[in-house]
Length: 210
Image (cartoon, rainbow, N blue to C red; front, side, top):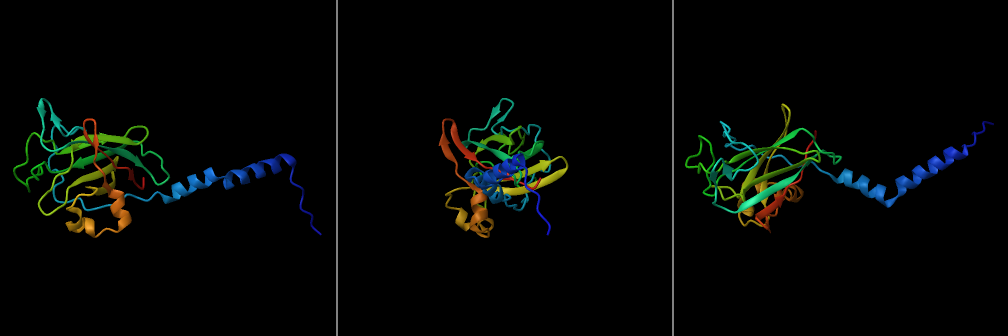
């Protein structure tokens, strides 16, 4: 008969402690939270990604040198870029582009864009994965509901291209791209623009496969 050697007391304490940790509510909640993180759904780039980037391509789309864009509703768009485990994607670059308040893009395929509106911006994420833009609440563009195009890059890799929508906008239900998504995908890329001290503020967390 083969006898199983007894577990040493110190090992018994370690195993008991590990079992208690794994069974703890906090451990379970954290594990479930990591499992529940889903990738931000991708969407088409659209026809108006800039052919030529503006000389000023920083995070503030409302200011170019001494020129200030004053139309529309000034807004802060901010969030984080993380992977599925919730880790910041350090070194990532977030790009956004959108039409001006009159519905025109800075692109040869569109005409009449207001030169005061930068229309395109880039922001490097911080150590915690955070990013921030100063722009306008997206405006209606012919045939589409208000939206902002978003692209995330890491070096030469494009991690995500998508579009972000405005929660509660009455045009959403008529938009062919918004309608074709399931409810979970809509929730992931439809955000509220809430009143804030200096205009509106929207938070758009992004989860990518990095």
